[in-house]
Length: 222
Length: 250
Image (tube, rainbow over the protein chains, first blue to last red):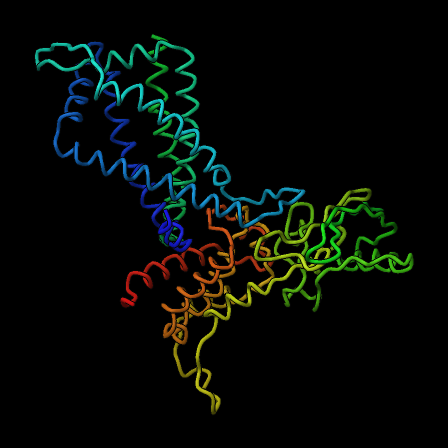
């Protein structure tokens, strides 16, 4: 923690952006696997994929890299934010609104809610899948733990669906700023490519958000 | 036009400040904002009251002395100009104008609307210069410089160091100022010699003084009276990353 404070502001932002982009790549893999649950009513494809993720040794090792990514992103985000608050001890009476990236003003807030979501999500799925007992289900391709059933049951609860959708929306806003901001922090700015990066970031965030939101909505309303 | 001014009054650096409302009447739309404050101050002096202290010098928009956070915006509502160049036609008759000093930990209030911006001088002293030999005047065109670099360096050098970027930033970050000062040298061959040390020292000083971090919100660019681009911040990030990675082991 002491070392974290010693890093310069730019170093912290570079670490922040690299961790953020790494976590973004994880979201893509997570979404692709999640979407499999919508493809067949027997949940075979999804359970097979979940089984692969839970048993493949390479993924097991990589899982720790992912945890590290989350922890680094969270710690640096909090440290940066505390320093930012301390830099203006006396606030303005009339708040300014000249920002050119609206969601950048709420990264700590959207981040905090996504973190709360993450903890609940972790308890609901990861801990249960890892340490709890989940009924097995047999297919022609083999016998797997029926993790898909856990998801379908959870998404029958309207309150949970609302919470899930809101959290994912906030994650989308977080990504919309974070994606293009990461490139700026890394110094990857160019008059020719930056407008494309910004557009790609917004489209990517929208796709990720819609993809994750579609799953609970389809399950709840079917 | 008649106006209500809500101004931050603070007797000294250590004193507790507060907002005080003043009425000014018959202000011309053609008057500059500082002339309007001059009118207020004259009326205060006539009443034997302490005039409002504010920074100003050239009143031509080039010295960087004037400041003022007007209705939530550094240098007021007009784009690409300083407070001294902003005219009262930007306001409506009967309007209330809130005038605050720059707010940042490294910019302490000296009195009323005046803040101490010597933190910027300290950043410049940390590396915002090039070392040259004294002696005869060198030939102006001895070192060829690409047109694009010359233009970009000139854009960066337009920074007058007023501190509006810090005032506008939600984090009171000085990144746009430091980036402009790093960029104007980084783009030119004369600046390359000390480029690595410069960016490390200036960023180090900026952090040490307690400015906030950059969230890439870009309010600084929107409010900069010289319209310095945030692309210079990206250049500084790049310079810093390369300087840090390639710096020799201490």
